[in-house]
Length: 241
Image 1 (cartoon, rainbow, N blue to C red):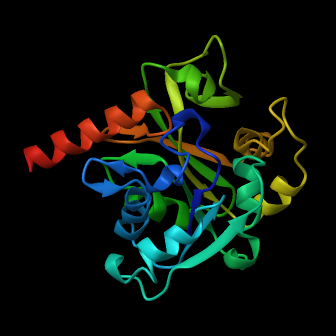
Image 2 (cartoon, rainbow, N blue to C red):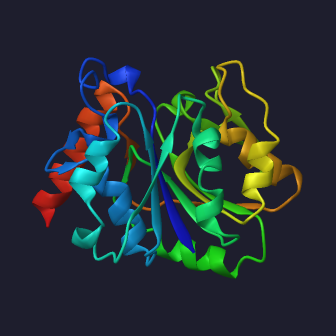
């Protein structure tokens, strides 16, 4: 399985912090934000990783991460997203890198306490389809929200004003090779972006999407409040160790 970190976008919600740097290079307590999704992938056993970035500061990723040696990698791959077309648009840039293999996609501002190794191993055994990780949160309206019938997800709603559940779809996704075909068939949403929620719903419609609930804490770091929360969670976890 190959890993993909999506670290593009303008980071407008964190302006002016992002006026002179990419959001994913901002510090989260004692490490740059981009370190956390890299650790997530490497600790799950994934060694072939692609970083998708963009904007005026894309070169800073190469200066910071180099070839990935600090993370135990032999090589780290990079590609560039022009403009801001959404998560699914950024994902499409990874098609050649994936080479038909299963992939694990992590959003560059997602920080989690637990491991995804078990989920990765389970997905390796899953014949086809996709697997998403859920987490119960206090503010699900900020995220993609699963709608349940019993224990079964029937659809996922993107940033609903009235969430149907208290669960958020975290920014960790496992996909088979058909993800690129699905992403290429998407139409822009009302926000003018290709939504990853539409990709997940496409898997739901064909009956091949599975899910599990993430253990430990999880947060994104895309707003001032969540960036502060992420730093506090990391600091508290390290203090306990």
